[in-house]
Image 1 (spheres, rainbow, N blue to C red):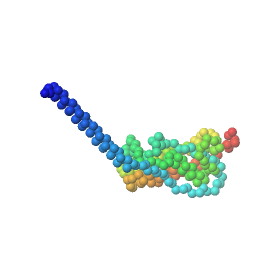
Image 2 (cartoon, rainbow, N blue to C red):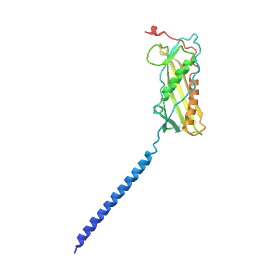
Image 3 (cartoon, helix red, strand yellow):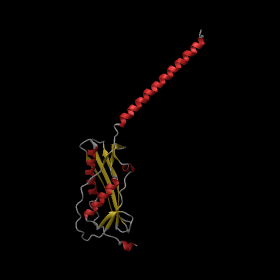
Image 4 (cartoon, one colour):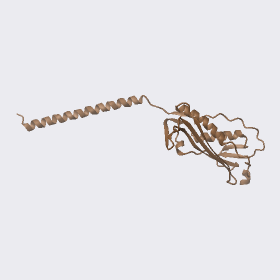
Length: 229
């Protein structure tokens, strides 16, 4: 006959094997569930939506009359959070959020810079307007900063805010001959990102128009590029 301690050992080994089988079965079940979940998620891959601002084209410049000054426009700067590509929203004055699947197709700083160049060319205030390239062949250099381009979700309703500042420097003397800063707020009538971007577009247009109006009336060209050498 099997002794008592032998019977106990057999039962213990049998119980251990059953526990191992249960653990293995549990592992298989969880693994299959994970595969199913991943497969189902893989069928619903979400891609980002990309947006750009689209301001109306400025009118053709008037004929140049007694205009000789040339100006170069540096690329506008911006806070780091506005340069990350995602559209920004603020649920409170102290908190900044980013839309993970709604992004800018163009750097907002580049967009503002190009828009300022186009509008200064159309103004007729300067004989030549170009992007800044470091060459001393202009009379003035305009530098600017995009301070805000964001959705505002506090203080009642949904709004957008655009803030821009700029200054113009005489390249020969280093003196600041003009400076301006504007902030514009627009109301969003529909609670979705395309509506927010549309209002940003309108608000940006107003902000740039106010930023560049008026330009300094007493801007006169300094020494010519040849005289500065």
